[in-house]
Length: 203
Image 1 (cartoon, one colour):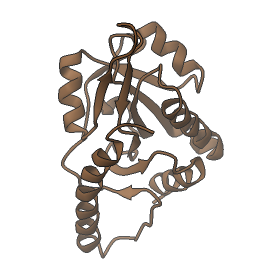
Image 2: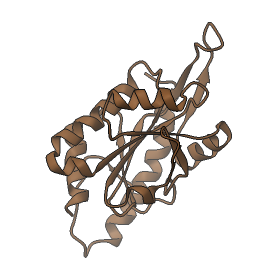
Image 3: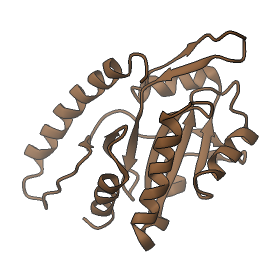
Image 4: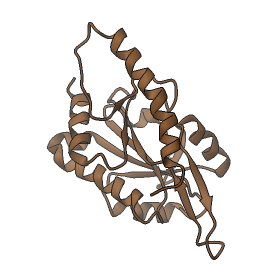
């Protein structure tokens, strides 16, 4: 699988568990929601981003108000994890029927050196025409990854351009109000994600 992914997720999930527990005890009077993914409602990280999409347009969470945003960090030359994750998000849109139109898939590249806007645009087209790929400078990417508790590392290849990227894998899910709500582990499956998103759309 991926180097250090387990360690990176362990750090994230420890904090997520505490956040979820706090949310349960503080919201007893509200309608209870049970999610398959990790409930990180109220987390003090990953609240927003300021990135450029593959069409050259500046993007923040406000651009997707009214939609459930599913955000994944990866890179286009990833052999298996990234395409599987993006294909699952595309499947979620299909499973939700009409509600699927209110799901916005976002892909943040951890390899801006090779993932040019044209490459990112073609990559998104392979999964769903509504998906957007986002990028920033290497310096800003480092700060963004820290805020999102995302691990990534360049692994040198046989040539300067044949390197790979180790990275943590999972999706952040925001509700239609733009609030961070869930973190899904890689490989959880489209059906479970679709069920969680339906709850966020129809609480």
